[in-house]
Image (tube, rainbow, N blue to C red; front, side, top):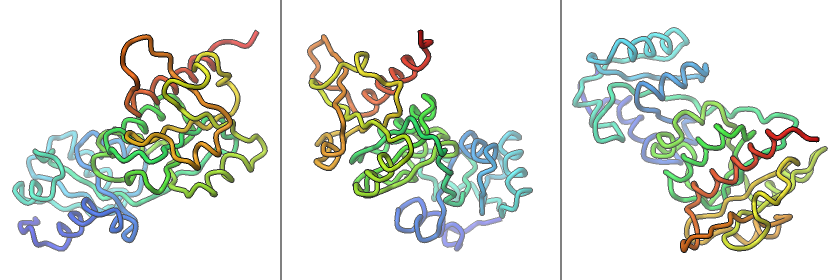
Length: 263
């Protein structure tokens, strides 16, 4: 059992939780809680380490055994030590280090989300969770967005990372990604108060939907790449919605349009 906060495994986990650079160098990220670790195990995502409390629930122990059977190193940890490394207020008794394992993009892309400078971890995680629920094929991040594998993003995404391709690209690479393909994606830029009303736009075609940052909105490169602007009509006094709420409405408008049979 690990009983010291200075244990090398504990220190390595703490570094992964704290620093994006460490996650890139080590090729791993940390997931906490029975439900999220269970989600990663169910998706057969490769794990290198799982730390758990001896008071962990039977459900949690089943996840530990599953990951250990798949090759992860499993270590019991004293409760106070596990709490010291937890990114949550109260440790849930289990955390796992999963390997960064980029999911492949489907060849026939027709629905991609581009997160342009989304810096709030909760917003990005919610965007990812919603994109997964709406059947988006993946999400592209600009380099000035928050790290997709930061602890708060992982919690807000509720397991979407294990099912949704995620890639960070510079704008020239994004332009190639969405345009230089057999069926180029029509790029819609979400805007407040201008552009086509979302239910008037044709969202059945292959699309990339750009959601701009919370404070500054869409960047200049995003505006250059966009084929059209898309807006959510708001009859009330509010001028705008936050990024995650706006993205949810627009993504499920895509779902709605694509669920209507073509005459």
